Length: 457
Ligand code: SF4
Image 1: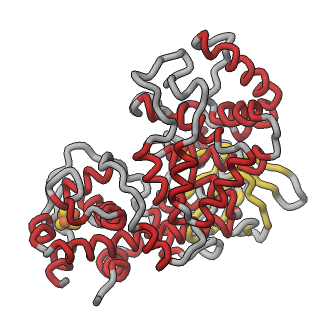
Image 2 (image 1 turned 30 degrees about the vertical axis):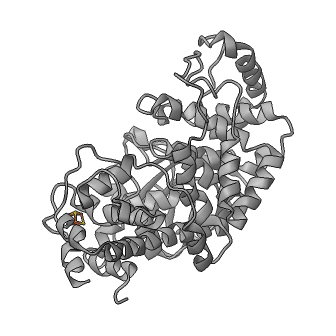
Image 3 (image 1 turned 180 degrees about the vertical axis):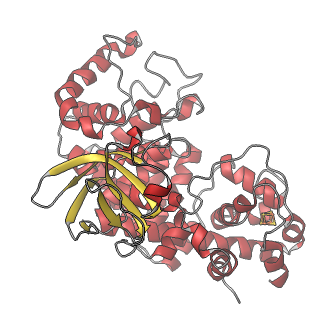
């Protein structure tokens, strides 16, 4: 078939600017995912075990707050983490003497610069270059646009005409090839997570991320790392598991101070009492409530409701069955299990104060459930690519909201995939091309190589 989408991206994007792509945001994402060899070695040869990468800080100050690790001799250390491309950036960015950086205990960078003065000796230095858990090119490709969000007001782009002039089967072939590229990226991230954290925890993180998608993906992923599934499964009482999830998320209201719905009062009080027993032990892992985006999501997709769905999945029998479903790649059972997710309060409410939804609604709606097929099942199913491809043909297709809508507008000039190319892989392919090409050319298509590549094809 000639050049593949993977070669295409490598030749037209990675080759263009090999260094700028290894940005701090890529390194931050690698750290957030803990895709480093653990334990790892500091510049001074000390071996340390990372217990928690810390909470991603998008405001002024260090990149991660409240990380914890076990140092040589077994002492537990806590503090903030600053991430740079070069060790010399500590001084170049004038962090010394800045009170915001006083609690930094780890300075993590890609490359050590022996000519630059080091960071203060109290801060351990870590060069990531030889300590990744997956190949760098794969990680760059996975994370280079991780913070992309849907932009409002997307306009049709320069290759729309060329794409639409292609015979439908050719257009579909190109998009599906890009879709495969996207799926392989997800599968390689899933494999790296399985290698780093085990299959069960990798499923737990993927499920949490998928439930948080898109605006609360990051806090959900942080929560899944802070409250590992095995720790929750070890607690036989479902109220305790739920209390820990809402408590560690920082989203459990103190019923003596914050008004709750009379319908929820007794139950919230019960959760709060249980959380009180754990609060001190989990203090270091508790997320700051400010990391959640509450106002901009639709009431049905409130993180409080999605958290109830996550909590439902921690029932040991349900979790065991869910793991088997994911491993075997059984899409029907996967969707049936998500359909059964429910909660006596959150099925009808969107906030603790008792705001009632206009109609009772599933905690995991149809569009989210079908999206999770691609975010959880396809990356983690223990089936061959060929088998997966055959199975996907019969998977149901969800709606066209968010990023897909933007991608369709930019690439096809309409806000939905055309009927001829309405397959799972073609939809994923639209998203991948949008991420790889259009998001890099946010304002114009002037420097984009895609139209040339298409002409070639
Ligand atoms: S940025 Fe590139 S891929 Fe996107 S519409 Fe413009 S020319 Fe096409």
